[in-house]
Every structure is written in C-alpha cells, then in structure tokens.
Image 1: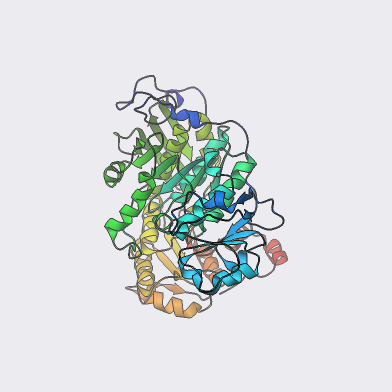
Image 2 (image 1 turned 90 degrees about the horizontal axis):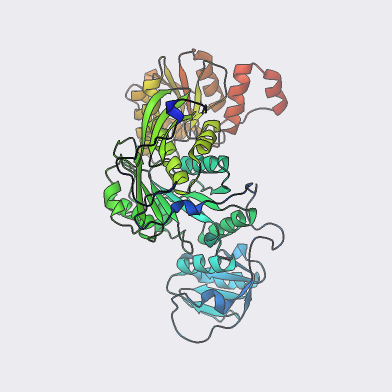
Length: 532
C-alpha cells in the first residue's frame, strides 16, 4: 500500500452510520470496555519446529496429579494420590517416563498396560482397566475434555497469556489467520499462527503445547483456524477464545455432522463459548451470520462488502496482479492494496483487518503488512513468474472449492484459463464433480496425478475422466511434471494457468520458475523431479 497525502488514505472524521458507543480503535462494545486493550507491544519470531523432541524444555510445568484433575467431572469418589506428573500423552507410543496417560475411548483396551510399560505414572480414563495397571487410575466422564484441561494445567494455561482468535467458515480460515498475523506484526503486535493440518488441529494436548511455545516466544496473540470438525471433536478443550470470526458457509459434504443444520450448529460452538468481554466478528454478506450472532454473549462486529457492515469494503480494482479496496471502519476509511485476488480474498482481507481492528492495531501499519504479503501458500497462490504471465497454485480439495477458485479467476482472465488437475483423494463422486467444474469453467484441462508421489495414478485418472462430458477434449498425462510442462508450453501472455495440487507444491513452484527463467542447469543440479 502506498502511504501519503490524499483522501483515500485519510481517516474519515465522520462517524460510521452504525458507529457504536465505546469504540476506541477496537470492536463494537456496548459495555464501554475498550477491546483495543488486547494490544501489546514487542516482537515475535515463530519457532521453526514443534513437538517434544529433546529434553523436557517443551513448556511443561510439572504438577501433582490431584492438582491436574481436581476440577474434572469424575466418576467415583475418593482421594487422588499425589503423584508428580511431568508430561501428558494420549497415545501409548508417545509416553515418556513421568507422563500422565489419557486413554481415549477408542484406545482403552490394551493401551493402558502399554502406556504404563513405557513409563506412565498415572492414567485418566472413562473406563477402568480389566487388570490393575500398578499406577493410579482416575475415572472421568469425558476423556477428551480431561485431556484438554489436564494439558492446559500442565502447560501453564497458555491461553490466559496469549489472546486467542478462532476463525471458522467453509473457506479462508488459514488465509485469514496468516493475513491477520502479518498485519499485526507489521503494526508491532507480537502474534503467531497455530497451523492446522489438512485433517484439522492435533489433539488438545498438542494444541496446548503449541500455545505454550507461542507464549514462551513472546507472542501476545494467536490466530488459528477453528473448523467445524475440530469443534465437534473437542480439539479446543481446555482453552477459551477471546474472539471468533465467521467467514461464511458453502455447500459441502456435511455427512460427518449429520446435515447442514448440524454443520452450522457445530460452527456456533465457537461463538457460544465466547464471554461478554470477547468479540465476535461476522461476515454480513452471508445470511447465516444473524442466527450465529444470536448464539453469542460476545460484543458483535460485522464485516463484508455490504455497506451496512461495521467494516465495509468496496472493490476499487481487481485483476490478476492484485486487489485495491476502499475499506470503511468505525475509526476511519483507508485504501488497502493486496496481491491476493478473487472475491474470497476480499472477504478474507476484510476479516483479517477486522481482527486487527478489535486488537487496537494501527490500521495503516496493518495495511502495509497486507500489501507486503505476496500470497498464501496453496490458496490461489500467485507464483513468482515474469510479467505478463500468471501461474497459480491451489489445493482445492473438493468440487465446491475448485468451482469457487475457477469462478474467482474466470472474469479476470482475458485469454485462456488452463487448468492442470489430478484426482482428489476422495470419492468417485468428488472426482467426477472436480472434472465437471474444470470442464465447464476452464478453456483447457490437463488431467494428471494428484501429486508427484501418487500410487495408483491411472486408476484415479480413469475414474476422474468418467466425469467429463467431452473427455476427448481433455489432455491426459500420467506424469505430473509433463502435464505442467504442457500447460506452460502453450501459455500466452494473456492466459492464466491454475495448478490444482494435493501436495505442498514445492517442486512445482521451483519447476515453474526454472521454466520461465530457462535455468535448466539449476534444475539438473537439483536432480530429477519426482513423477507419478
């Protein structure tokens, strides 16, 4: 973002139509408490590696068993032995001497003995073992809840020292988290992201460990994705959120939840857990925001492109090189430049700005952080290639996601939209849906392996080919490298190439750069690229 004189970069002195009592560089607050008090100063550097490798310098604060479990709903009565606990795990093979083993329901049979053999000094379980394991066993009503709360105690309740913001929705969760942290750090607010794997966050004790590492590194704010699955599975047990963000919902496979209503209800759990001093931010462009807002005690703020939103964005320019927004907030209006493209990224950017706003961050500095962020890996990621060419990578795991990515690119491409796609690691119906979306919205489609190490490459490809209405127009290559090469060979300056990948895309990023630079010697030095 370019900063300087001009009306577009000035804070507006006029009040927002819905400016609320108690605003002071913070969120909507009907109680007069300044949400900007969340702000802290300092610097933060993310640790490059998580886990329990090495010695016990993993943030654990040893405690007695009784102190750890005394507030948990327990089955049975009696005193809890004062056993010193120096760690916690829910898998027998993760146990180290001195650990508390929490036996989850599916792991109870035989796992307790294995955990004790590895050094567990106490056990928490929903059901007692058939034989005496030789260590204290505490029976609880909910082992997952016990795992989260026990871990929070052992790691020194890190969520009390780190303000936590959970982001939920059918899209954009990781993008908003990374954008928000980039903006906050640019504004001098030490912040970090707890990344979720593709199947969601780890078990509650791992999340507590990661939060404690952020705390110990100096972070004061943590932004993390909070998927409906994670909420249903209790992965946030033991921590409370200081704020929550709702991005929106889309038609997805909701069988895991029981149905669309249950899916939305799962997301509502995030907002039901927010207290009256917390902040809940909702995308006003999505009609589901109102029933969700009715579920929370938190102070509510809205964002979106709807002019009635508290933080409202207007798209001034959008092309394949980026987006320029004019954003009206309760503390003024600013111009915001981003290299991200597509309607979803407009929502994501305004949501991230809203997070920073509720934390009292300087919005000009936040905007500078957004502008310096080239892309989010795997989320309509624009690769560094020479002008005027455009190549994007997206992980698009299902037909709904792929359709949205293509719809985002389609109106911005003046030439052809070329898609390289492989079969997703899902059902035949999902593969057929991906094929149909690509065929209807792209100008040219190349089908190949999902990523470079796919096993049954042709089996998945053949299944996917069955979803095309005109398969004869589709190019097929078993080698993903050759498929990418074919797309780049035929690209013209006004075209755009979309690489849909299940992998991390590292090899493809480098291959694409080498292709445009003509640096074949560098490619040879790295060795051959893996092929499916």
